[in-house]
Image 1 (cartoon, rainbow, N blue to C red):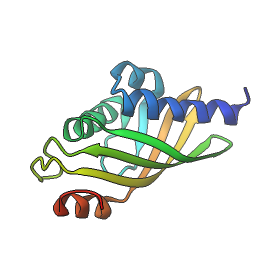
Image 2: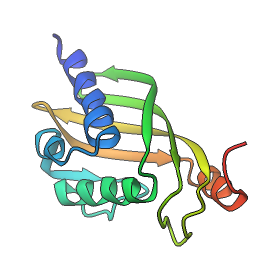
Image 3: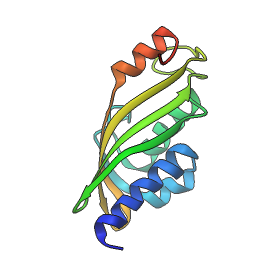
Length: 140
């Protein structure tokens, strides 16, 4: 497998194992200890603890969260993911109490991968669209 395909495989595992299964062991395998985080939802400190806290926060708010890769494009050490996430708002999220609303959100993430681990991440979720759905009681 070439480097580009190997890097895409790392990002697929991030989606499947970290996000969809909530497997904390995957964080230790897939995230570099000193990963640099530029994401909208991370604490901005980077590394595994930040990744672990971010995934836990989302899975607490949306326990049935499932992310799907709509597009996955890679070149060199960079992988761009266009994702669609779906879940039920069963826990507090960004100050909003659980509503039971079924929501769908989209976003773009850029991962830089080295030696089989994510070393840098930029996240661009549609926060406004997600919050509007939560306030309105779900996806239309």
